[in-house]
Image (cartoon, rainbow over all chains, first blue to last red; front, side, top):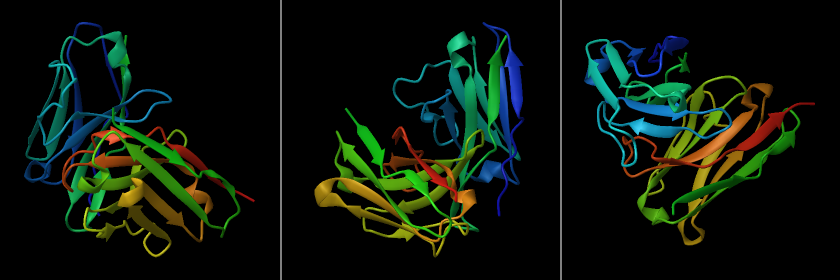
Length: 108
Length: 118
């Protein structure tokens, strides 16, 4: 089955840029969705179809996808961005939705 | 306001069964694909099942043959029948919606906890 690999943790100072990667074999040929999950809360969709933002999501959140890596970029990071982030793709070979293992973003 | 409210979780013995429900409101339920996603404590997200607007169903190998997803559009409700439960099925179960099957899941419920233990 298809595997998505995320770093377990990323740390960034307030006001700086955080980049969270999601690796997968030729992931650039797939559409990637990204979710933010804060402790005790349900996930929230922050990026869909690689780089689109749902209404209500700040422009500071952006996404890209090419080759074997998709990236969620959070600009001008705020304390409120501290959360777990998950990438997601549809794997047609197994007819399954696949999530990455998640990345804990820590704002220093 | 879109709302998804799960219920039906609880403690069940290994080999037992449980039926989860998800009550939807604030949108045209029949027009959306619906999903179940679970999360074990301290772990990541795992997709469990999906049902399309036409009633077509999808499952990963880990639950195929044990879990059954269904929907009742007249009641704006989504269900997950879970049989032959195992300790590894212990998790918070979320329902989520997607406008089309390959879309991201744009609204999620708050989840219901299922504990499989003797």
